[in-house]
Image 1 (spheres, rainbow, N blue to C red):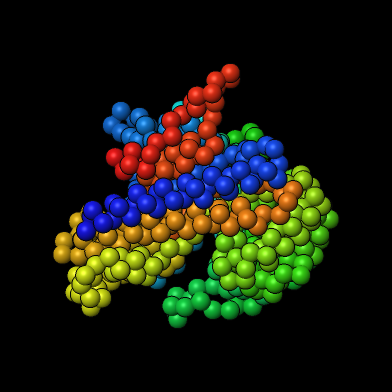
Image 2 (tube, rainbow, N blue to C red):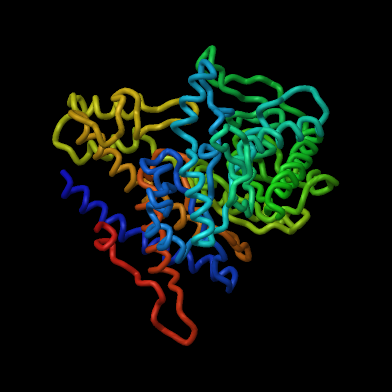
Length: 481
């Protein structure tokens, strides 16, 4: 079985390189400058989600070789909100004890927070932190400035962990070394507060523990109040971070592109983006916007076609200069490969039937490991053991994981191929994020190394006056070792 998997891995690892070759140079064709920055966002649901930040017994980075290699091509690390929520503020559970228990498994522990700080200090990574969830937490009739302040304060309850720690006496004290947050990525801020949104954890759409389902709450605001809440929140959060670290973070807005109507092109929620941007641009409260990050555009392409995507990008790009700061454009490579996808692919390579007991048990074991809303698939509850301890279910479960990883890389490369063909002329992509919110890729270290090698093969770096690439382009076979 494993030999068949390896053959597929090698084929798919080689094929995406061809996709990426044409794609990256399409970006360059629309602007002579190459992409300025590559960002690595380890998946908080991967097997090594937290372990990659571990310190060893000597207080050195346990995975220093990985961070050294990653830094050769990636200059920024993106930290998901899941890594920050040690208080369980955003975890849905039946009681506070369950929230704390889940948070302890998901968020970075003290050793790993120190490890993240050391990663930045030792390797000079910039750090981008995911924020914005707090905007959908307090949806009352209070004035916009009160709601904005409340959201910023709640966000700082989590971010303060990068600046403060607890001493042996249980007192909160300043860390000897703190993290520097270089930028905040505010995830879908307008969709979290505006009326009519169906974004998860928004004022209008929340998870009900009592019914175990998502419900429409109709607590969102009109466009004018939504704009003021977001504008004031951005300024207050930026200022509070500045107080802690004496430097202001850059502010990036993440737009879930498929959900918005953009000019003539429809979205999923029937909400108009361009009038909102126009009103936001006239606000007196928001700070300079550094970047507009596009999330999930591939999903829009898959449903509606690439020409609509190209039109959306063009219309959005034309509206961006209105904003204070004249933001750049970035793209997030973020796909969801489900267990159903992985099961389908894995079954196609087996001679047994889909009713095979091992297959069904292995599949159910993974699925039952899911928890709403933040899940720990590879330390799943149905086996009550780490993923490496599977017994009779191990073979198929591991096959599914491996096939899921292959599918994730394949979809990512297909995404870039589509961008290559349909990015409007003159629109430059400044930054690309290699990140995931989901179970795949299952190994963040392996995924990071593969992305570094693809960049070395497709966009080599040369020393001045040399024609020899500074970093070697390894073959797919090398990556398997």
